[in-house]
Amino acid sequence: MIMYNEVRVFVENKSGKLARVAGILGDAGVDILNLELVDDGQFGAFKILAADPEAAKNALSAAGMSAAYNQVAIIEIPDRPGGLVTLAIALEAAGINLNDAYGCILERGKRALFVVKGENLDLIQSTANKAGLKVLDSLE
Image (cartoon, rainbow, N blue to C red; front, side, top):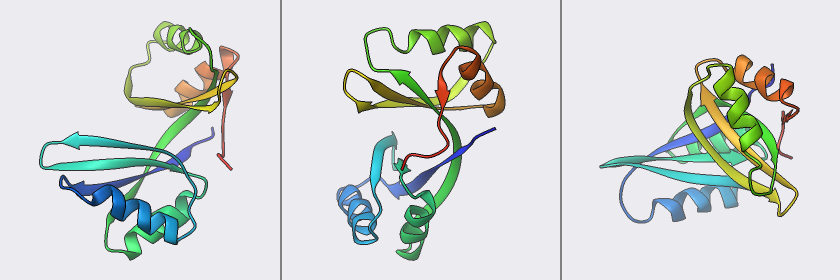
């Protein structure tokens, strides 16, 4: 099945990290499509969806930051109230538990993304397809 590499950057939880990560990626010409910060006390992680994940990881690693790939499934859902329900019901019916999930809008009132991580990405993606939803293989 299709997998997408989200880039995770592990950082100390202190001011200036967003500016540093954004600056490194901007200088490298990396297009950030979505960015989420997860706080875990003294440390945290940026979860980054980039048009070019390899360029993002390489730029961050070259700057001495701890960056790694995290395989996720990216599912397109309608951007409307209740747009996530179809996927949520399908995942529940298949007995799928998600470990991590977040979303963002691609086109207001039309298309949104739901990014998920679970124990079986193939099953997540096939469940989404069976529910009539599109699994994306790129974000360019």
